[in-house]
Length: 289
Image (cartoon, rainbow, N blue to C red; front, side, top):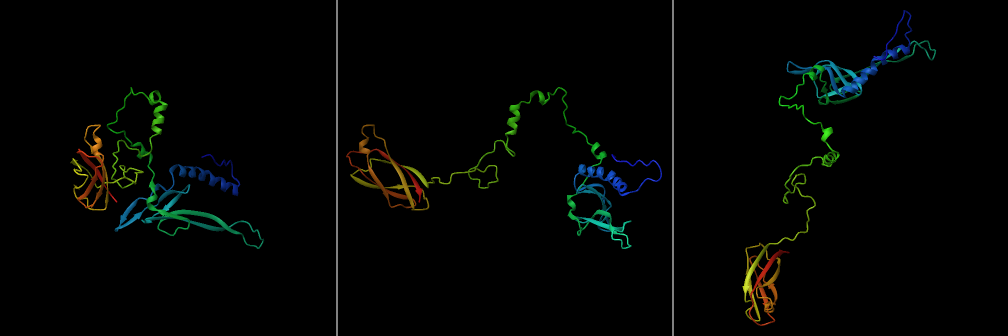
């Protein structure tokens, strides 16, 4: 210890300084040891046994708030409480000259015990962890399949700054080759796609109707049939695709509209401003409204 009394002869003065010196000589190193061990650590004792179907815990010592304090055994409980008692004593002084010695705090005792009701604090028993002894630590053995290569080149020789920056740039929790899935709705899933567009064009059906010479007269209507789309409330986006040679396609110039929308068909009506036969097909999308 850093502090030690040198008592050369009888008559050494036992003053307040003496008692503070003695107390600090062990309080300071034990406090440092408590910090080294960590808070709420079982330093010794506190073995749990079962007596007549009752779980009991033995006396011991724990660390708490930078101190090593005794633990009083008894019935095991899920809560540990910290208690403090202060004993008053008559000091050899009479400050008010009333003929009576002054009674002041003299002895403070702090301890831990299972159960609730501590006047300093309490915490779950599960917060305690047992300190490993030097014997436990020395019993560590290397894994049997560990390969020690004497020719291994230390990373000081081959680990570059660019590699370090690359490692530091990897986000915590990053994964390799995660397969994204458009249909995954759980935002915590690795396959979830963020910021998906919401205004997407959905269609009920797309199709092609081969019409050939349509209309065969100045005006004509025909039904365009398709599988049941479950509604008649839709719009038709379409185009006339001409198959006539370039230069003769004017005959395929038509004005058209749709009518009579049903879940499985609609009517296509067309008007031809020029005479002659057509060779067309009608390509269309059915869009829900």
